[in-house]
Image 1: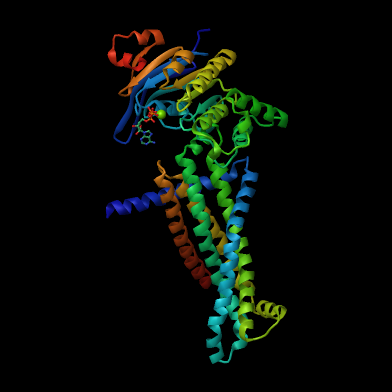
Image 2 (image 1 turned 30 degrees about the vertical axis):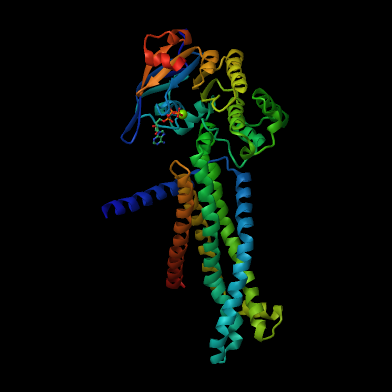
Length: 252
Length: 244
Ligand SMILES: Nc1ncnc2c1ncn2[C@@H]1O[C@H](COP(=O)(O)OP(=O)(O)OP(=O)(O)O)[C@@H](O)[C@H]1O
Ligand SMILES: [Mg+2]
């Protein structure tokens, strides 16, 4: 039991130091811009198809599932705005973040883990290249920037899926559907949900890098790093989400 | 001026947990000298040269390079020393997301800023020519054989024209002809640029050709020291057993 607790505190301490190192490295010059762009591209490219499919299905299914209930209350006209609200406020951010946790965090964990194990990170260090700056900072920044963009994309795809779902039984033009949605959408529906996605992105990059960078020696640890990265990143998404929702609830 | 040793290790200790690897190594090399380290697998040869570049932290003892005590340097000061050292990893450690060309270019560009594009290209070609692998310039590390990997790693270590080169088994896994070429290359670098080298090897032909002095590591200490000819005729049977 004490061993278990000691491990948790150790890990928490290490990850805090790792985070502090990120902010310190940010302030130092010689930012690796090209590597950053390359990572942004990798993040978007890897997840775009997955997010398109899941976003679309979420919007579609949610509409189909909600229709009977709303019909009962004779409130079918609320369907577009209600579905879009739950999509934009909660479902799209969380689903997108979970997909990124599965795809990106594990990818970063495995990539950095194998670089660590095959001494590539050591090779950078002896060439006086700061591996933290080159590998970690660029990846964390890339996920922090790209996850929010992917969420906005998922919002649109989800609403579009809702439109398709709506038209299975009803008939409404795409333009009408979108104006219906936008009419009921307020600044406060969108903004808190959007802000939390930066935190999702930050933690996905941070946890993936942390696990990979700290892989011990031996090829087995690469798999472990990737696996732990997914688990920890997914968990952190839910925890951040819970805190974000409570904070929003408190202040607005 | 008294000639000062380029590398001077005194009483170096290193352990991993309970496992004591180095128990007081002493080693000093002068400019332009090649020192070969022999020792059985797991005796701590790689750990010794990793301590030299700060990849492993020494527990006790002093390491001075170019007259600077590196155990007490901060990261920036350490990097100022590292750029003057070439390090060839035992398993190559090539960046596997980059092609051979990018591997060399990446190292070179971070080493010497604002090099002209044509200079970079000619340096890359020169380094590859030295290891006889010009035609592999656009291959990825995963497409190279084990020996080719080694030679590219060697090219990457020498491309920055370092004053010190640390070779971790430069000829292991190579056929005898290529191994001899690599040994000759090490020798010619030493003669042409007055490079100081530490060479870890199990290849006695390489040790004989490119080493001025041989040290044998045993139980965490330097057990024997001398030229190839001296050690070959050593009274100690264990030392002699390396030379069969
Ligand atoms: N990072 C590490 N963590 C724990 N133990 C290590 C580490 N690196 C090396 N060791 C231990 O140190 C000892 C010496 O390792 P080293 O790599 O220096 O051997 P070596 O002399 O280079 O052998 P070889 O000829 O097989 O390369 C080994 O027993 C190894 O288990
Ligand atoms: Mg070794």
